[in-house]
Image (cartoon, rainbow, N blue to C red):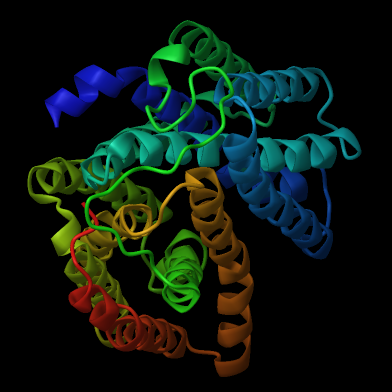
Length: 394
């Protein structure tokens, strides 16, 4: 792990800064639109839908740009756009300006997060270890960003946008100084065009296998999003404090960092299929536990299963796709981020519809467990057998 940190620390810190900015913005969106700008929940939901759509689009376009143009200039363009957007948001964040700032933020953040993941894929040389380490730094950004909200937000977004300006300013300085150091050996020195990696043993994943893996991301994040949205309502309905909900996410962040640190020691291409299946199984188990048991202990036990599943599964999918595909890392990692963002966007709406129809959280949790179980079956049937027949890609 420390070898990866020493050699790729500029990329890892870049991921931390960008995700800190991302994590300080998205939890405030509904609160600010509804409580501070006095927009109805319907209008707020529509704005969030547009934001999520542009976040998905940004993830995909960021991948294409990374493959076709100089990574250094793509990164500078995206970071320059983000710092400009934050400056505009600092001065103008009323009913008209804030939704526009938010949509641009979603588009450019999607592109930047994809660029970071694509660079990790190009530099990984087939090892899944770099994805585990990158995920640690991304989650550090999540912890820092969400922890900053309570300190900075007091009915004004100016302190929030000031933090964004600091993060993006630091990211630009880092990128200008170290972008050339992060060039992949798989890229031509002068053209910036991708060159296929040479492998002694090679088998590419087929369209069906890649589609199943990407679909698994969408469906997993669709269910995971219930923890980000509807579980908070469930906790209040149980007569528990909303402070408990924040404590659960602090626990999630700390446990993620611990588990990912351990994963960097054992991560290997051969283990990725089992890693993905076990992770999904743990996530399904967290929802089964929620559906059958209540109380503080049950919530922390369910969060433990969710966090273990997330730590094992989430970095496993991009690592597996990267290991069994040749070239076009930006395209594939852009699809990974786009399909993940799609699940996060649809999840809260899906959960609200299920609760509104069934009038019971237990049905929602059971359905989420079933969805993750079906993904496991689909991957076991459609992906794992093909990989067992394949030789190692390296």
